Length: 454
Image (cartoon, rainbow, N blue to C red; front, side, top):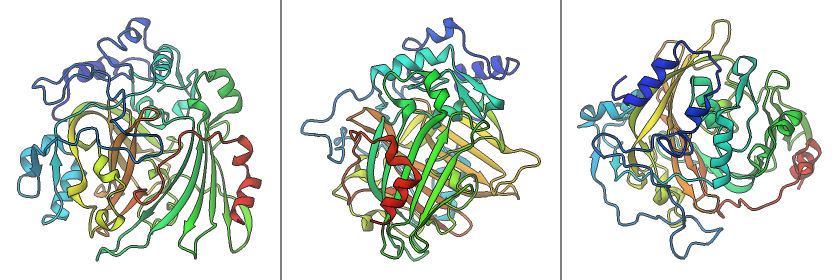
């Protein structure tokens, strides 16, 4: 792998012979907030300064912003530094995943990356930093990595020893405690026409609650609860999904229920996992593609390859703006590249290989995880012929009211059908509400039935 940083390579080599699930020493944990950021990223700039040192990220919102607004661009004066396209992408290959390179080859006339100044904007509340440091010296993987123990609130493994720890950091990155959001998805045809599918969603994250106790979390065995109801089009409206995600997925696997408007019944949905097709996705993504990766990691072996520098979407406030319409974003082949901001960042590289005796439509997956936020920013997926099958790209920004770095839009490209699905379209809806106090009773099968009938 090209362009691996010296620090990350040294860590990877040193840990090759270490115990797979060892906790870090107090001395290493003490590096958080000093040599390393509170989330475990390298504090320093890269060698040529094109990636600056982290200085705290965004700590205040732009003037005039209030909670409930679409988030204004904190860097409106930044200009495009250079553009990568099909004619010159070869000279930037060391900054591109193989999947990204394939997009230039697949759409040579239209796909491009406008690259801006790197802004290390990711930031989190102080209590998240504090708990991340606490987790560093106590958190453990259990049941061959299919669960976690002794962690709460912050990422469990800010100094990861292996690929499983890194992917758990993505799954448990901070996104607030209780969320209501509206938005939707669209899967344009080859001509660019699309049908918008709207969702009303609610999410509670007990793991992220300030003051959460890891022993109590383990007793309930719940990481988060997610509820989704289709709001449009009319033929799908009322269809609903409920998911309870667990900390120890061997003790209690993910629990899921669906409500079907035709049958007017709630049914258990054990197949809402792994490579089952995603909701109304036209077969363009799997269930475990959602949020770039979710669910049990047990069908893969996970290898931490090290770090590299990569061009990834970052600070994508223009794409997120309520001044932009879905028709402006959605085009044939890929979303409108003039609305996307790319920056050079360091990413952890994690490779997941399908275990013998298990099945999945993806034989191999390579995840590129932003070091500052633990958000999977790019994922390359390979089919059983070892050919690139799909490329997923997360368009991230900082949500000021938390604060937290999270994707505003995720785009899953199917290279074989030359189509894509964009998830998280919210430009024409109200902004996420991070303040609601959802109740546990709102996330039961009975609640799903009531809401489905409304």
